Length: 117
Image (cartoon, rainbow, N blue to C red; front, side, top):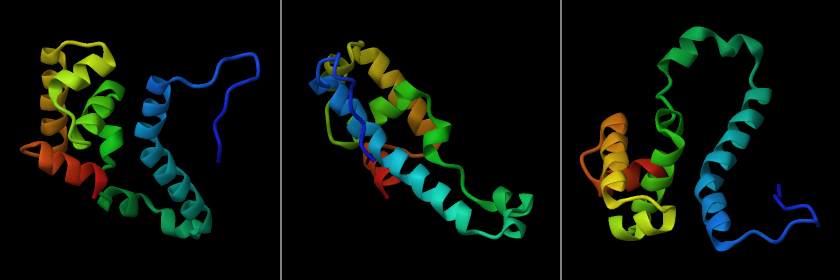
């Protein structure tokens, strides 16, 4: 699948490409789940089966928390994340704290493992 702009618009900028790169894993996973769901018999989609699945981390985080967590998982320091997203360092740390709590991880290394593992 490709994403592109209409001819009347300029090409994607660096910031837009970074955001698209951040959502790529989630988008690919959603497409796979969608494809796999069409291959599963309807009887297998019982509510009990859905209740036993672990919640998807992307559904647990807000959009900004996903952005901040994704950049932190890439190893970027808080200051760089703040500059890229146009927010304060304190806001970056708040979003990271929320992501740590929601995903039940203690630090950035565990966060990166959860996001990419």
